[in-house]
Length: 419
Image 1 (cartoon, rainbow, N blue to C red):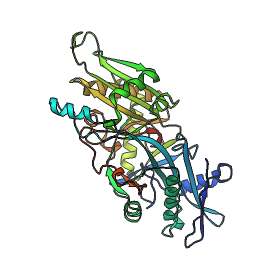
Image 2 (image 1 turned 90 degrees about the vertical axis):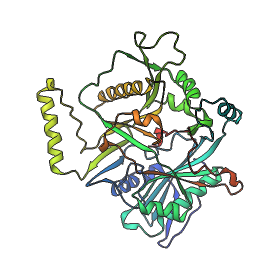
Image 3 (image 1 turned 30 degrees about the vertical axis):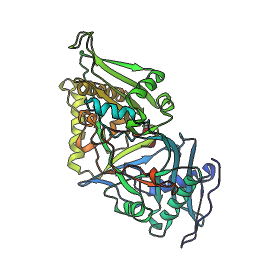
């Protein structure tokens, strides 16, 4: 990582500097253990994602830079008070699509002509600020402010036009810090749709065929299915993401030749998605579950092991740390599209079943994406409180502000590398 971050001082004499992996790794891991973290990865207010009495927490494992290392420009900043590490923050800069098409997929010729006349939206340089942690014993001392300012300064020097961060609706402290003090604006609300990995294979109908695309073919397919003019936050390095070792494959589901479609069908139905293995860098954990629920699920697992012919839908032990497979690049088309997408989700589930570390398959989508209604999910494994906030880092061009609301017909792309 090129460049040094200038030191910043707060009331308690805290120094902000770049991470030295060899020197700081143990201290970073200890700080992570002291901080409770929600699904979006933010922790400014020390809140967990709560649903009634239970909460779903995240534990980062392995490389502390895993969520940002994929970007050519990335950094992890640490805050020290004397010899003690009291805070960290990460940032990376990527070229992503801004979207901007104002038309939806209307059938009127006038709307189509107007949409075709619009120039393709440019890719813009965006800073992603994530992983803010402050030691519980050093909060409300300006440490989070110093870290955010340093991350923004680092991003601005490298030409980022915007900065984004993710928090949760219930994390009032984080929203107050970013939206109140730093001028970030809440603008997107993706939903996480999760389903536990069952002990049994999920059936896949013979009416559907599942095909795996090579990374090259997948990149070509997504170039048509996710045009930059209609897609927000599509990374310019999508081909690299599709070819990444943690992308387990891109899969297409179509109707079998003996199905209802014919060779002359002008617009056959299909569905496509990619699967990312998040089990190597992240663990989820359910806290605060009542004893009755714990014992009930344990009894169901025991019954399934003892009498597998009953095909009881048992789920993994979610009260111990478990990993996830993330579905991304979800698209569907045609009248059979939702059913084909459900077939792909079953295929992804069956892939996850072969990995003992995987306990859930999840997808992050815009709530108004038609695919969101077709993806099978469990209420207890899903979440709708995530809030994306954005800030314009470039004062020279007010027109570069991101639209406050998604244009009709646009698609929100959620990069699994930053989950």
